[in-house]
Amino acid sequence: MVRPMPQESVGFPSIPGVIYNGRNHTGDLFDFGPQFEQGILSILPPRVLGTPYLNLVPKTDIDGNDIAGVRLPDVAAPLATYTGWNLRAVPPGANDGCDAAGMKVDFAPTRADRLSSGDPRLSLEERYPTHDSYVNAVTRAAEDLRTQRLLLDQDVARYIQSAEDSPIGR
Image (cartoon, rainbow, N blue to C red):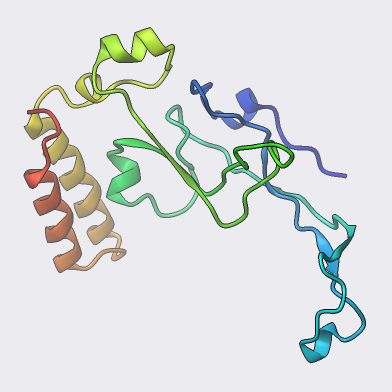
């Protein structure tokens, strides 16, 4: 059976209040009864038949954002950690994957806030000391995607306008 990689191997930071177990979800198979194919559910709740595979979380950058895939400006010039996975919040399911529910973990506004909470990720003020530095980071990310033909001109303009209208770095 494939085991999740340890947190430090994946690169996901130790964010205060965030549990990491390396699993997105388990991909359980369920038995809803013999007439399931006809749309009739006769076993409720269904019986768990097994876990044929694990869906593991991907490698991340130092902020906890996925490395693979198209990195939209929201990830290339981030204001938070964005994941495609999350865990159930309360027992008995705590530490179980919460399928189809990602999470957003905001960066601390200031360095002092970050240090007081023990968050290893840079704060907004450390990343974007001025408003222009944030707008420039978003602009570079959006224009790079346009060059790769992954964003339309009007989408690039919307990302840049949104960054210009934001309070980040003000």
